[in-house]
Image: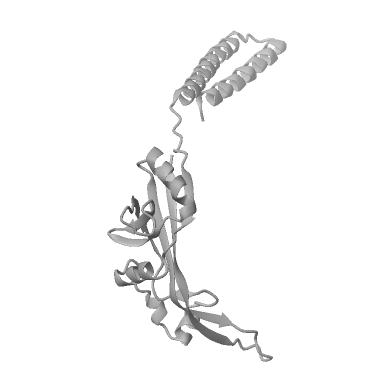
Length: 221
């Protein structure tokens, strides 16, 4: 119970004693001591209520004066790298930027048992990591192009339509965070067919290859 609550309790007792004093006086007895105790309880109640109000105001002032921390307001520019098919995708496989996916080695029945149904399971796990974007002046096709590297491995180019925007962003925000998300490659897909008349579920397995794609996100303030 806070100080205001304690003060209210004393007020109730003071009022009760005052009423008792009135009753005693009505009967014909002296109620001076009762009134004195009631006044004392009223003074104690006033002290607690005043202290409680002062404490609440102090807490409110402290809360309003406390600094308000606001999370930085980040913006993002997202695009898909070009030039990933071909030798860039081969580099991704050769340098193991994506780890081998153990689920890809499962048999059809094992994938069904693991509920890996209706979703593609790639031979390499999708990779999320930081990357860097650098000028590529030695590019014989376009010396103004920008190349994308994860570590020391080139994984694509900035599309021509995004080059000027990316250059401006990186010039204005040299500390921008650049992340890439690599997906694609060989996959297995367990498809659930329509159930039979007996309620049994049928599954078919499809295999194929999706083009490797690199999604690039530039995050800046």
